[in-house]
Amino acid sequence: MVVRTTSLSSLKNFFPKIHQPLPLTNRESRQLLDSITTSFRKNLDKEHPWEPSSGGEESTSHGSAAPQGRTPLLLKQTSPSPPLDASKRQHAADRHLRTILSNPLFAHQDTKKGPTSPFDVFDRAVSRGLMTQRRAAGFLSKVRSEIPGESADEIRRGMARSGAGLRVIQWLRASGLEDDPRFLDSNLPWLLVPFMYAEGLEEIAWGWVARLALRDGRQAENCRLRALVTLLHAIRKHSCTSYSGSNLNLDCSYEAVMRANEVLPKQSDVARRSLEEMWFSLSWLSTVLASERPKPSAPLFESFVDIGRPMGAPLDMAHLELHHPLSPSHSAAVRFMHDSAEREQRDPVLRRRLVCMALDATDRLRQVGDTDEASWVERFLARIGSDTHLGILMEQIRQASVPSELPISSQVPFRHVGN
Image (cartoon, rainbow, N blue to C red; front, side, top):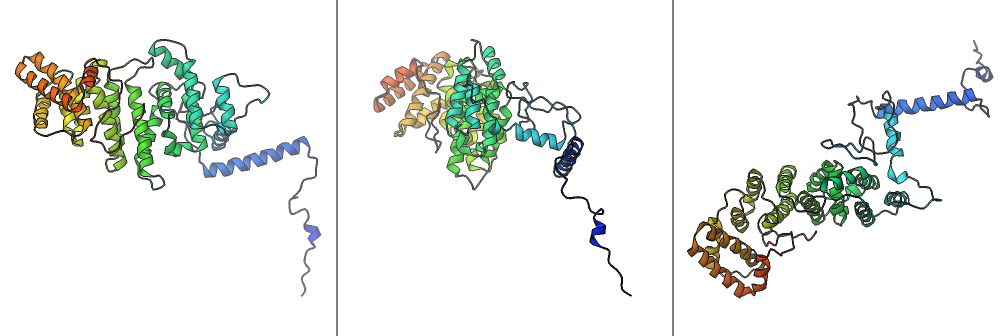
């Protein structure tokens, strides 16, 4: 028996039409848009499931500062656009689109109107792909120069309100430079770190510290070391200088060293060497330039000293004992000088540090009434000065006119030169 097949033309109403006749009516256009939107949201939600709202985890926009004590979540929201309705805040499609639209590389400025502020210049350069580390540093310097106020608190609040630090971080992140340690091997960190702390973004800087310390075959070790040392020195410098430029005590700097000691992995050679750099620079501030700052907290000072004990720095340790905030001691310094007197010190760096310590030891010995030992230290000091022609230098040190904040030490193989 032969079975007749159904004619294809009879199935024309069984399959949906592939092409809708044009033009579409308003109702048909709305239905098509809804269908596309629903499909897009469904597939995006499948790839990025909904997240429970944590309440208030939207980060600060570029025009305002983040509250103190809270880490902004830049990846969640970095644009100045108005917040979404609460019912849609955690929708994956909304978050994805807002991330795309908030990318500073997609920002467009009105080309008919010239830039009127550093922010206009910055945004225009970013949107045209002309922004560089040097120009970003210039932008921060210009913003800082235009912030009014004389007190440290006024300046800090002005920097926080500007949002300039967040703006630069958004550009670094969007352009991919955040993942390249070479952006830190420049003048940018010295200007960016104070803005980051003012805006409550310091946790981002410590995130960079942790990431740079990890071993990564894609980057040369020396490149990562230089970048990490620069970043840690920028953090250290900011922690001991007020926003108005005056010298603070070193409590916050000691806390920064303690934080670095916790964050940096112990098995990383880059981490170890960068921590030594930070520690020795702060040891110099704590001793040679101690008279320029108020006395620090004794517990923090002692914790800082304990971190440096495994570094094998007897000269620094002896000098630090002379500058203990509560109970200074000259014993280790005198013992070190007696040991040094038995051998010629050919290293000029070591001799310079010895001069500094000998001057401090002399003052301490005279305070406690040990004139015999003080006389011996003065003869030791005179011999060092005669051997190395440091008479002028000794006088400068006596007058506390040494300008450098960085240590001069031969005990660290890599020496960073920076601000």
